[in-house]
Length: 174
Image (tube, rainbow, N blue to C red; front, side, top):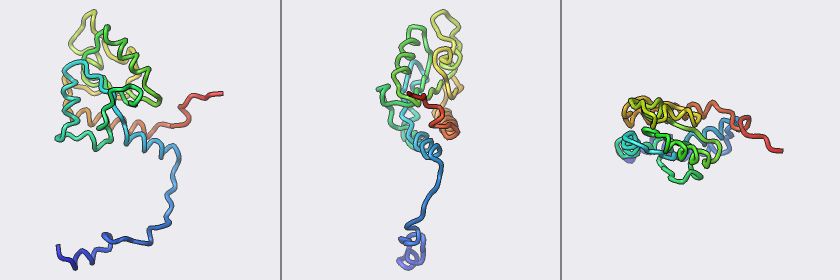
């Protein structure tokens, strides 16, 4: 590219007419926009789906495009729990305890057939869906689901977050 062509492009230069412009929006929309673009997942990798969850954060799939690259292993720093894999009854109460420690607002993604419905395991030891304990926001199907499916689930969660009312749903304190 020659020096003349870069000088001819007015969009590359600083435009002083932009200074002073004002953006008007609703407070709910601004807060939800910030929330949807900075999801901090709490990965609950319980079985084979956890490998696909790890693959989603690799360079090939790049979960960072959605603001969810900061995997937090502390529930007090997370706002979305990704339950990936088979949930046994022995592990279910631990998952519930970790969910209860997460600050509000919080969301849950059930990743895989086992987390969603117990999968192929119809036994006394396997919980038949994490939605018996936690309110699930997004279900991701597959056994195991591909990393692209997890990214699609994150997009669905972001769309759901943008439709929420951030102040109406908060608890009223006296």
